[in-house]
Amino acid sequence: MATLGKYCKAYPLQTLRAYPGWIEKAENARQEPPAGDGPLVTAARSLQDDDCAYVQEDYTVTDGIFKDEHVIFDQVTAKWIDYCGETLHFELPDDGAAPIIP
Image (tube, rainbow, N blue to C red):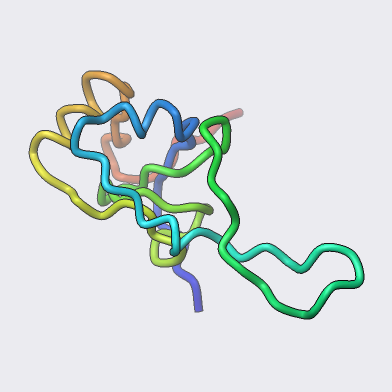
């Protein structure tokens, strides 16, 4: 069963791909259903710059909100964490949980 983390934030892939150490695992992208009346074969979707991906609380990046499915980037280093903070302004809430929006 998929695990929903406590916090993640969506970003356009173009912004994430700008990181110099970006190594994308496109084969882990979500599956697309077959188009039309074609064969019942699914394949990883083609990730475009304007698609959103999710930086998770552990700084991995997923193609979807679940932190343990469709991981497309897992090269978590101090430089990546710095990029997330300085460039993406990604910051975990103080309690590690998603902020409550009234």
